[in-house]
Length: 250
Image (cartoon, rainbow, N blue to C red; front, side, top):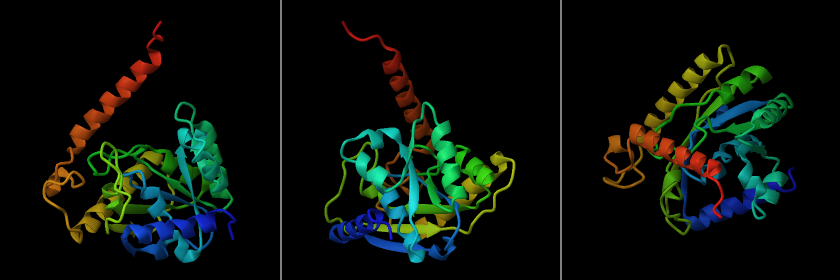
């Protein structure tokens, strides 16, 4: 038993119940009972990692998530993240976190990765980074695709959080393991195509409110298209880069 992770999951389940979240999970049997695996998850909101761990509990396993270093630097969340043995990622120097993840995979851990790297403002599957595939290849472990839908309604980028009792339905699907193979680019393309298909399948049975901010444009929502979201991300990245190089005010 994990002395910290186990009670944290119990607390999370209590909070989910108080919020009235209604989970539908399918494919949890695809989480291996033993051995390492990369768990690749789509990224639509700030809370989706808390939901991604639920299918792994079917086999009483825990996922070690890769998360940005700033979360670990926080006086509030940092001690919890370290106690849960998650993996900090310094985006300016990612080699250390990459090697740590590979070592965890070789040791038989489940490592949670967001191939999109950042939240998708369009709620569509963004272009993937190759890290998940490269880790799986180097560690010799499968990739387990996981798609979550509805998490963006709880708390997502650019919109107010809704952490009260909202009775929000959240759908989770776990795909069949994908064996690692080279080149990493081809494996990344297969993972992307698989998760896109899984997302479309989840959305078929989900009720979408016309015009809602959390609904993709192709389903009648007011979320930006993937192209528009990419432009917003690029503008935000350029502004952050400009702030880093801007001389301090006198």
